[in-house]
Image (cartoon, rainbow, N blue to C red; front, side, top):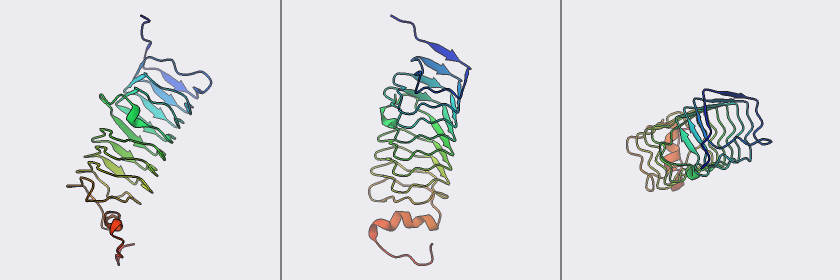
Length: 194
């Protein structure tokens, strides 16, 4: 049996992983800065306490990828299928990221921090994002269906459409202007809220 590659506390700067793939193995406390992973595969790779800054990970294959205590900052994460990740210990945070067309279908993302993120057309169906924070996030055409949003914070989020009848929203936080996103399925007009 081939020993697993183990890399710890290493910085990868401006590396193009579309040319030379990141070797399979375990990466702990590593930093990836201005790297391009677009359309490549991170299948069966384990990341622990790693940070991705200004990276392009669009359309990356995440089959059985372990993402534990991972920070994404200023990253492009278009079309990622997070439901294919190894769900054991999955722990992520996102700041200033574009996750358009990504999917967290059936994901367990309790207490996840999304800050200043573009979440357009993201699928949160059957996802547990309870106790999560969506600080200044744009949810244009995002899907929430049978999702657990209990105690999540949507107070500064925009463009969401959440059906209270098909999602769990107990003790979730919304602003007065955001309440429209909970009522739009009824096709009613609400005056005084813009």
